[in-house]
Image 1 (cartoon, rainbow, N blue to C red):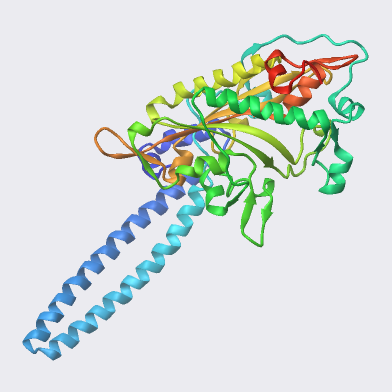
Image 2 (cartoon, rainbow, N blue to C red; image 1 turned 120 degrees about the vertical axis):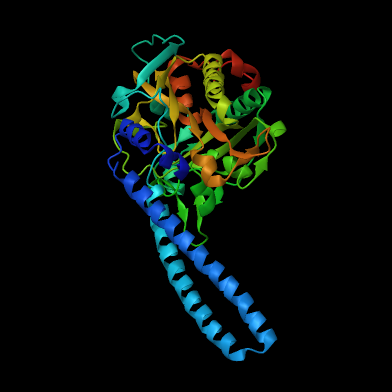
Length: 422
């Protein structure tokens, strides 16, 4: 959530940055400022009335002590009238606060100055590429045929158990999942990230804190009887570990990693892009999250990008890094880099990670702060990235490394998997 003081200080700048996102309701900024003005005026008026009530109450006490009962009764009537005015102001205040909160929650984060202009994924900017695209023979198969041939993933039984888009991993397919999860976690903890194992369900306040609500209700599985949501990413519970806390400077940076299953409805998804493991409703992902001082966050963002990039190098996968344009960025992000790996059989790029700086957009909602050198509480910046999401990584590993006798594994996984091939 944007901070009202920042909007008030430079509303034109806020409008300019929102236009980079192609945000359609720029006039909402003016309505928010107008509502905030009204709120301030009513708060001052209510405080003034309360001060009058307090003063009159003291007078009543003095009158009663002197035995001036008639004067005291008249003064009580004045107090009653003042309290009625306060009640009226409180009702106005409540209505305005509801309107203010509803409107400000509609504003997405402001794009960083480096975010390129654009309306869709076609306008994203290529930062760099790495790795080598393999050359496959004419008999090469897409991963959905390979997993069926070797009985590594069973979508039909998964559909019987839960529904379409819920894969059942079997044998070496299940072992590969476990191998990648452990490899990713070990890689992250070696870089100083503390491992967490969070709940897979969160309450509404937690989903609100990271910006999933009220933006992504249609993508989340909602357990209505309990008011809980299945998590779409470990980012949601793990970032909230420090909600409503004030950290010491000596605690920073906070570096966290977690493996979780993730659940996404992916409403409206269809076509060739959803075949096999390309898009599923339940998948495994390892996440990295940092809470840092504002002045350090963009340097940390670049470090996190390099961290994920090296992981892809270890997996020996061809990849590219994109800086997302304003029209393709997530609601909560100030700057996002996407990682895509090349799928040789499909001859297309598949997204496997997003690494983002949210600045204070999330921490303002969660009230995650720290005390600076002057002892003043300041909001921290939050960042997160996929390190990594498994389905499309698995798809690329299988397709790019297939042979007549199975699938070769990258050297980094040999010790973890206990073999050089699937």
